[in-house]
Image (cartoon, rainbow, N blue to C red):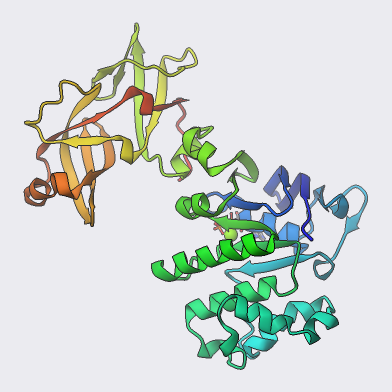
Length: 369
Ligand SMILES: Nc1ncnc2c1ncn2[C@@H]1O[C@H](COP(=O)(O)OP(=O)(O)OP(=O)(O)O)[C@@H](O)[C@H]1O
Ligand SMILES: [Mg+2]
């Protein structure tokens, strides 16, 4: 009962502002696709076009080959005739309706009388463990319960596709993890297709079968979480998924050097450039005390401590090496004692391996935030 979604050349603009820019995307039947990107890149607008809440200027959208929208053929199927459920952050529950009426709303909108009479509302509430809350008003529920009811409402009509627009961002950390796991479990049990919008990369990695990373209304990279993690296609993607360390490297002869003058050998393709930008995961940098023997390390940098924040098993550490700053995680078991006593400005050493560096053409504007 799920459909393959094909989006082709989709363009939506507000005045002269092109918000979705010739977007092409195919979502496999039953796939969990995550749309990831910074604020304003067009995620919500894309979902609203899919749902039929916005009329695009160009392009087409089809479900299993059946056109839902086609600018050229002048097809525009209204929202209640598209088999879509919505769980939007801004789609608050109707405050004057009971939970039961809220969940029943999409069934009524789509005139699914049989489903209404056959216990579908109760079933949807049970799915999210809220069967006992049916006669309450939204104001009598906790935030997490309200969010779960919104999930139940999005799924009650058993749509082919459920659109989630940052449904977890209002929840505290514990509930966010709980509802996130619940959404993925429901997806796996029921097999609906899902498009899930977030700008949290760990949420995207955890949930998605594939990630679509958006930039200025287009898809910059479409791949599995593992592929995106291993091979971010551009510096924009690398930055957005948390590869926050950035070095500018300049070539002189065969050697490359950092802005602070540390020389290193690059194994990656440098596209024949004389200057490149390198990205590095915080977890690929190792911290050393200044008196530690680091002679067996491939690349070492003298640095000074800028900050060390306790994070349980790890310290989140920031160090400076010349004009560059690096973020890394240091094991509390190994480094906790001296980090606790250390002050800003104390000398430290960091090391990493050349193969951990992802190399991109140098660009001043290609950063996600
Ligand atoms: N109704 C509207 N009229 C005019 N401009 C709009 C309208 N809706 C959205 N925009 C603009 O379109 C751009 C994309 O908005 P959209 O809501 O799709 O971004 P988003 O990726 O969902 O961002 P966020 O992560 O902040 O929710 C923004 O620049 C926004 O200001
Ligand atoms: Mg949005």
